[in-house]
Length: 347
Image (cartoon, rainbow, N blue to C red; front, side, top):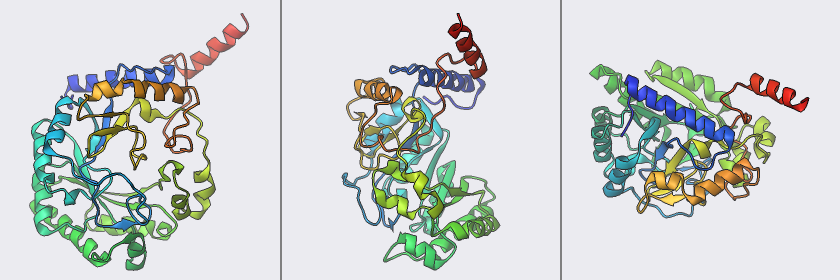
């Protein structure tokens, strides 16, 4: 199922990457590469109302709430070949609210998923859950705490129950427990989103959580959710708002040739910006991932994206999609391509 980190596994990954890049540059609609699974959404229930999140305040997410079932989770793992590193077992929602989270993590590990991660707001990080994470075999855990002060944090991550002090204490106790056990797993990341409210606290945040033993502290770029709603740009750093509001992107979106996101109910989506599942490309309850990946909907979307006529509500105003300049003669390097163009233009 999973290629792993052996020599043969690395070769499989390299071959898959080759065909991904080939398909992108040649505008292929039927792909020879398998998709990477970026995220499997365990749940979209959440206990915070974060101002920068479509699931937050205001809650503009209209799709149903739920938890991924064991049956669907096991079906997905039985069919998927390639995962991102790590494959995030969350998308929207707080994964610690899923009642079967640790049983599903255990199943994934037993099936050979070599790199699995979750991101948590740490509100439910009790000593018991901390120990369960440490015992689970998770490769990566990310704790999202936006701010170094009560004022900033509680303005961004709104709750009537959980306080800044409690959340910080939960994470500090987790890091202390991990240190006492003498283990380096899971790789523990602390994250803060760069926005107007947090920009003056970024460096202090990094210094503080490094001091408490985090393996990595990251300042995540602000996401405008593909410009589907104007309100999100207003929260970005003031100097970046004009750029974030621009609707043009220079190159085709690389996600359509690389990866998928799987919602808790089994719908396959093209990227993590599709918070309301407005562009479902298949359903893993009744299809395999490979059937979806090269299905009619994906083929048409790739054709429109390559041709510059992708007018779907999700994609039409997106300017944060990854992409590069198209080289129609790839894998020949760009300079060779340019030389051939000059030669043929004079012949």
